[in-house]
Image (tube, rainbow, N blue to C red):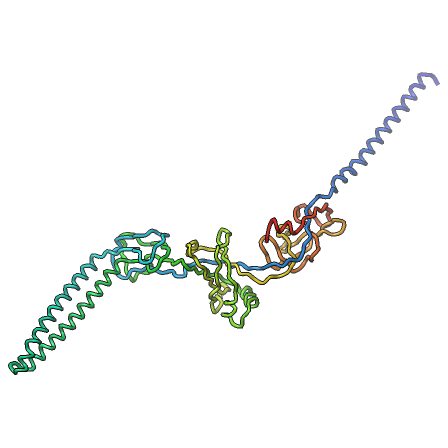
Length: 395
């Protein structure tokens, strides 16, 4: 073999070795690349986990409620006439006896003056009749005139007395009607809407009141219970009769429309005797003091009835999720893998649930990041104490 052919042979051999090395490297890269990617993909996420425990929890139930004044008094005219003055604005607070409206009093003043004049005339006639009687009595005794004249004079005197009495009555009626033109507040409270304007013709037969005055020192809050809630109510509170059960209800709270709690507690006082068939509910009433006038008729809110303390597993509401009207939590199982478990809720307490089934004291559940989890997924648990959680977000 010549030197030239030997050189060609070695060159071909080197090219073959290079090609084989490149193929091996490519194959090795392709084999190792998915393995590294897979390793990155199974990195367990770090998520907070709590160990649930049994807690004594005071329970409560909320019921939608409306507020009304203990005395909502319709202000109506007692006489017919033109509304000449309106002294108050809608929503104003007024004191007992304060003037609210003025009906044109001129016709009633005239009637009063006429009644006064008739009374004066009747009293004058009475005096004349008395004089005639006094004049005839001695004449009859001396038999100067007959008894018939005296009896006639006495009858005329009695008629004059009756006329005076009637005139006094008419004058009193005219005076009352005159007073009715000036409409005052029967109690202290707040003025509602005023549908009439100055110049309106009003009368005691109008279907709509001039306004409504809400006496606000004491307020009534009305709420309703469904049949099931009512059955629970009867079994929860002691007493043989409904009156005894209502009397045994502890003071209740009023949750205002903005979510704040009214600073004074009320007392359940009344329950209707029967269910409203259309609404399927029975109504209750609670009474609240309102010394500072913070409550107004028409306010809405919720009545909160405290129940008996119960022991149950307490979990944060945020550690649960719902699927098809069922509630679940992710429980930490063996090898730090999670599994979804259905839970049964006894009551809701603030941002927490008290459970009656699904978890037991000592079980661990994932607190956050539930949207990233699937059954069987492994996590790196980060322990969070339940005590620190309830201190930061009390129930």
